[in-house]
Image (cartoon, rainbow, N blue to C red; front, side, top):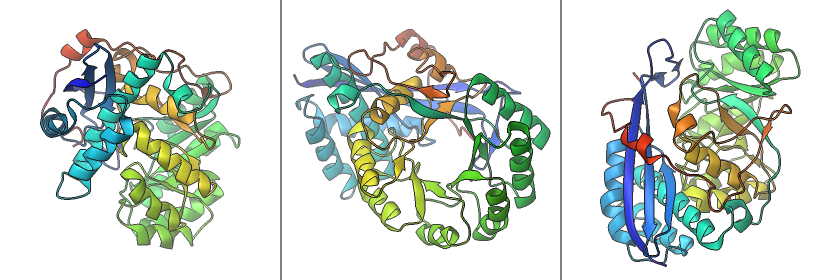
Length: 379
């Protein structure tokens, strides 16, 4: 069974005024995604999701041209062989770097969908796993830079839905970051896990100032206070408090994760299947983390395709941590691309699907109704 066609489908929607969330990377004004449709010469179709990289048209063009030319005609079931060819020709030397990793991620997920459909098995079974409860936290583009009272009310509503953990957005100014964490802790009580995401926007001085308050509020992790390349600041911060650090959303392939883990500063590993290299590579990253006794807590991307793929992976490894539940007030990519990707149990857990491949049906009419909108998604 050979790869007969590869087509990128960039999609967008405007965030309605009043539903915008502000966080460390800006104010969300639109949402983007790049879906990848792969068809074989036997007529089997698989879907994947590549992260948009804040430039979805460029990522889509890379998929439609370079990646397609590299792998058309290859064995569609040789997922590792396809991955390795793209890595060698686009990431290892003179390639597009991060953009190629995003593009490869979407292609890889689509090939796993095909593999599962061809074999009549869900992806988690092909990886050696089985459905099991996975802890979820309330995340996505939510719980942003708002006044502490409103934030506490929003957080309490998610706890009422069944979430036992939630993630706040830091990286504002230390005083406001601290006030938000303290307000939410007072509202939800001691038994809910509060996580904080710095969205790479903190200086070392900022991080030092908030750490004592985060420790007092029993914050479960401090995520991405610094850009991914700033390994030294992560190492320095890890020595200044007992709040564990988390990172990985903006790291690509097992090679970058090898250094991230070996440095010893980060306790929670967070690859995104639509960024770090797809299911193939994130499975390797999870195994690497397991060898260091670390859990894998993937970042989830824009649409239900990524979320479903993430749960298949988490049900197939021995070190699943938290699944990032998307509680954005408005996200049709979550709700309508392939139906609701998961259901939260009263225990605050989710699990994977049982159908062949990803176990989804993509609504192509919805995709056609949401064409690419050029321009930045955060301002």
